[in-house]
Amino acid sequence: MKSHNPQHFESRVFKVVNGWGYDILVDDSIVIHQESVPVIQTKQVFAKKGQAEKTAALVIQKLKSGQHPTLTKFDLQKILAPDETNDNGQRNLE
Image (cartoon, rainbow, N blue to C red; front, side, top):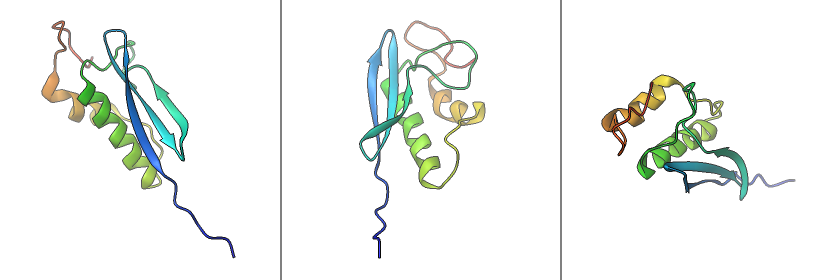
């Protein structure tokens, strides 16, 4: 009989020009490489490392519960709302 090994999920944040991005790894293989904030139409990076970390954690939570890892604007608003502007005074979510 085969033993079932649960998948191991991990996130890693990384520095990009003017901000942060994240990788999602499953069993040490990158399955998602996100250099900008997903969902919004304009290409925009996460202004703060913590925003990328929280977003990656939400993606992992969805994957672990069997959901598709797609995020909604509402998901991002919950993460980015406390930090409505980045260090350059720009809005983080349009």
